[in-house]
Amino acid sequence: MVTTEKVPHRGMITVVVMLATIMQALDTTIANVALPHMQGTLQASQDQITWVLTSYIVASAITLPLTGWMCARWGRRRVFLVSVVGFTIASALCGLAGSLGGIVAARLLQGVFGAALVPLSQAVLLDINPPHKVGQAMAIWGAGIMVGPILGPMLGGWLTESFDWRWVFFINVPVGVFAWWGIARYLPESKPPSARLDMFGFITLSLAIGLLQMFLDRGELLEWFDSWEIKLEAAGALVAFAFFAVHTATVQGVSFFDRELLKDRNFVIGCTFGFVVGVVLYGTMALLPTFLQSLMEYPVVHTGVVTAPRGIGTMIAMLLVGRLVQKVDVRIIMTCGFGITAFALWQMTHVTLQMDSRLVVLSGFIQGLGIGFTFVPLSTAAFATLAPQLRNQGTPVFSLLRNIGGSVGISIVQALLTRGAAQAHAQIASTVAPGNVGLLSLPPAMDISTQAGLAVLNAEVTRQAFLVAYIDDFWIMMALTLAALPFLVALRPPRRQAQAAAAEVPH
Image (cartoon, rainbow, N blue to C red; front, side):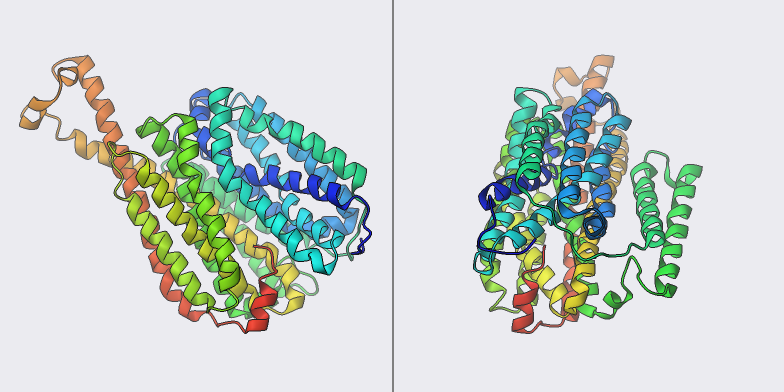
């Protein structure tokens, strides 16, 4: 497709490709507030229900690097159409799922088909707009990406409260049908230059990531290395990654991971920081809805409203940092971003069961600012010193590591939450004995001399134990954020012209 002033139906193409992008962006956050409702319907435990999030992220992360190869082989329009159809059907299957296994399998399909939607929409907008309108087109594309974290929690909460959690997924069906019709009707075909795929590298890396995620997701449930399944998953992940590493280091010609990327210090450090950002961002997003609905007893709509300011903060910060990144050292901006994020997490360590929603709203908005001040300068620093010919290989790797960080973060915080709550419950319950004079001031409903009173008291002990575990998780993420700060000095400050070029790289 050639960029020209006379591309027919440019406006309609923009609408339909952005619909597909918004649909995919919404699904990164829209399901979060519905998790407690899914948990009850699907009879899943606290740590099991997060598989709904991690399966989607992992599948998307694995499939994302294939986008360029698929477009070169089958054409951009055809890949776009198949992706929209697959994503729409998978969304319907998520809504129809009657078991945890069913919805996890459907979410895997969602991730596989949805991975290409965002990079494809960006590529299409770049192709159909003349150079003097590219900035405007990228602003529209960026706004579509930001709709997810802003509207996702509110829309998900409203759909769950007004209809059912299944409509969080069914809402994609009419949007997907219209997007498919528009793409089929208006988008001309385009084939980028042919590209080879290192199938062995792709398969071994996919196996390593998939087995690592299963190890993290099921480890707490199966008592970690007391289970043969966990041992096999850990061993399999290590073996698959070892094969991938050896193959990448020795293969002649095209490899799934270009070895030249490792020679750029900024890119390697940027990817590492991207992993940390994924851990903190997605970990917090997975914790808050269950905390607010299970412990604070917030209605699902209210949960969506109080978590939406995080997206607003991110959007404001990204608008500001777009100008600052050309004038201020990106390391200074990132230091501020990580510092702001750590402060927001420190605020969350002061949550109580008696507080109102102001702390959640304020800390969420502040954390959104911190993430926004981190994303753009992080990608700018990572790509500013990378050779231009390596950027096509570098962008999917950068996104891959951020997504893996997100799935690993969700799994780890949930495992720590489950274990921490059990330990805190045991410690608190050990003080519940007839000799404890503090029990005398408890209300009659918690009279430990009766079975009903013991049940009510145990429920309250469980609430307090989970509160302790949530606070511990927030402390751990804050410590991780602060621990990453000293490594910023290893980044090279990019030259101004390199910064400007790198700022155009997808984030």
